Each structure stands twice: as structure tokens, then as C-alpha cells.
Image 1 (cartoon, rainbow, N blue to C red):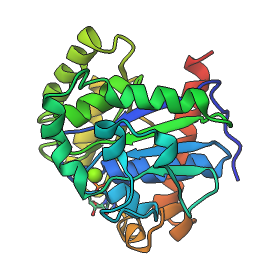
Image 2 (cartoon, rainbow, N blue to C red):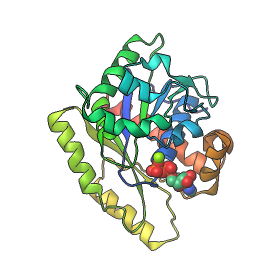
Image 3 (cartoon, helix red, strand yellow):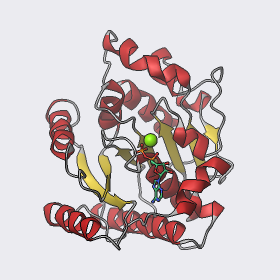
Length: 271
Ligand code: ADP
Ligand code: MG
């Protein structure tokens, strides 16, 4: 397995895009799996009531288990709800259950409603016996209070963009929201990484959109592009990342390369 540099402190990345179906969950799961394989200790927080990240990581998400809902709404410790993914000994997941669907409304009247995930995550990372290297927070397709909690808990935002006609629509709204959070709630937040997903290089449109995104965000867009691949879409139904489901497939290779870029860029910017 490829050796990658480990960050001195946990890097917390929120994976966000208010569009559904652009590859947030797929990117979260596969980057997390790739980094865990390279030796990093990785935590995935599933903040989407759909729970697709939990399912793809093979962890239990039945209604009666303790979950991210209990962390955010009931002040339960992450330590008490986290599960190890069968994918790897160093890959952990805070699952989401059906209860999270109500959390958006319950949060509205709570004290420090935007900071609840940050508080829980800070306590968990500070007390962990072995240090974590990466935390990925998989967001729902909205800019509500759950996503705001994710922005407040992270330093980095990772935006997956699907190279299709409407790709850039909604992006300015997302960036406006991120700068509002930066100004009012989390001065350290920045968009560190953009990943082009479900790329079909045979179409002119995909290439045009990719060029367009790169010219707007030359620093943030990864060189690695994630191809459209049936293997990537099949893996979750086996409770696996594509990296363990079909290690040598182009989708697996591209997510491992993307993970290496993220690790190496972090090593550069964290000095
Ligand atoms: P989001 O979390 O943004 O809603 P998902 O990661 O769930 O998006 O992806 C949406 C759908 O597209 C899923 O069915 C997923 O399996 C599929 N998918 C994601 N990435 C790829 C890819 N590179 N190639 C083929 N299918 C993909
Ligand atoms: Mg998702």
C-alpha cells in the first residue's frame, strides 16, 4: 500500500454540496477508505438522514442504535456511538439513523444550535487514546442546520462537483453560505478541495465544465478526476468501498490517487 504523509493534527473536512446525487457520499466513503488503507486513522460522521455513508461503510444503522442524532440532540459522547467499519481497523463511523430526519427542526430552538457537532467532535478528538488523522463529515443535500453544524465543526470544505450542464448552478449560493459561516461562526473555514466526479471524458460538455471549474478554482480542484464507473455505484450494496470491492478498477485507482493528493497537499500547507 502507498505510504502517505500523516497530518500532525486531525484534518476535519466537511463534504458539502446542496445538490443531491453529485457524489458527496461516494467521495466521503472512498476517500476515507483509501486514507485508512494507507495507515491513517479516519472517522466518518454521517450527517445525512438517508444514512448512505453508514450503509456503504457496512455499519449498523437500525433505528434503535445510538447515532449522530443522540450526539447532536441528546449530548451523547461520540465515543459511545462510534462503530468500527468492517472495511478497516482504522476506519470508524458515527452512523445516522432515521431519527436524524427530525433533528433539523429540533435544533431550531436549541442553545448554541450551530455548535453542537463541533463541541462533541472536539471532546472526542481531544480524549481519543490514539490520535485521528482525518474526519470526513458527509452532509445532506441542503444548507440547513445540520450542514451548518458541519461547517462549524470543520476547517476544510470539500465540494464534489458533477461535470454536467447545471454543475455551477447553486455553487455561488454554497460559497456565499460558506463565507457567511466564516464571518460569523468559524473564521478558520475555507474551501480546500474540489473533486470532479462522475466524469465522462467522451463528452465535450464534461470537458468544458471541467475546464470551467478549473479556471475558477485553480488551487482547489484536484488533478485527479473521478470517472463514471459502474463498479463505484455497485460497491455500496455490498457494504464496501470500491477500494475493497474492486481494488484495481479505474474508480478505485482514481479515489486512491485523489486521497494521495489530499494527503500531500495537506502536508504542504500544514508545513
Ligand atoms: P450524494 O451523496 O451527493 O447525493 P452519491 O454519492 O450518493 O451522491 O451519488 C449519487 C449516485 O451516483 C449513487 O447512486 C452513486 O452510487 C452514484 N455514483 C456516484 N459516483 C459515481 C461514479 N463515479 N460513477 C458511477 N456512479 C456514481
Ligand atoms: Mg449523500
